[in-house]
Image (spheres, rainbow, N blue to C red):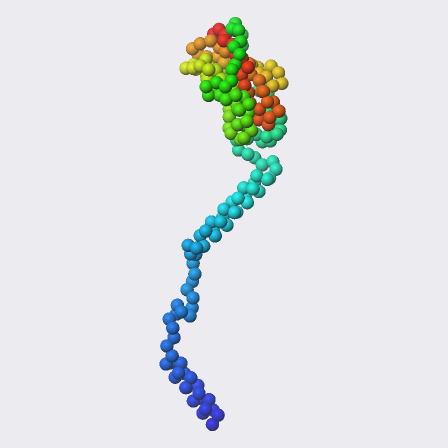
Length: 202
């Protein structure tokens, strides 16, 4: 009797289950959820935060190599005085007769005052005035002395702890002897400025 009742109950449940209509699969099994447009701003903020963190950590590492800057900005050993160049190496020498020195004047048409130039370097703005030869060429070009001239050689002569003389030889005119100095020698990246220049014979 009990077995018959159990069998009847199981069959009744099976029949009832067959008559029940199940909802579509999407209603009782959630679809796989991919990234939505609402997630993009969060992802962008996380990536930006990681990039900023990486930059901050990189900047804080001592002894890092900074492209375009001295290995150690405060290390004066990285800023040596220019060594004398051999006259025979480029066919330019300092011998000859020179005119009375012409005192340099700043600012020129394109060159700022020495203080303004040094301030720009301190702020991280690139300048070639840290190179004694380029500083000499830039000044004479800006005041019109080297306009249209092709340089055939140069000579650098250190004359003091923060002073040097640069001789520039031209292919189509007289040579020039330029006296330069570092007006701010205690700066991490001191600039060179022209004090005076003289015109010499060929």
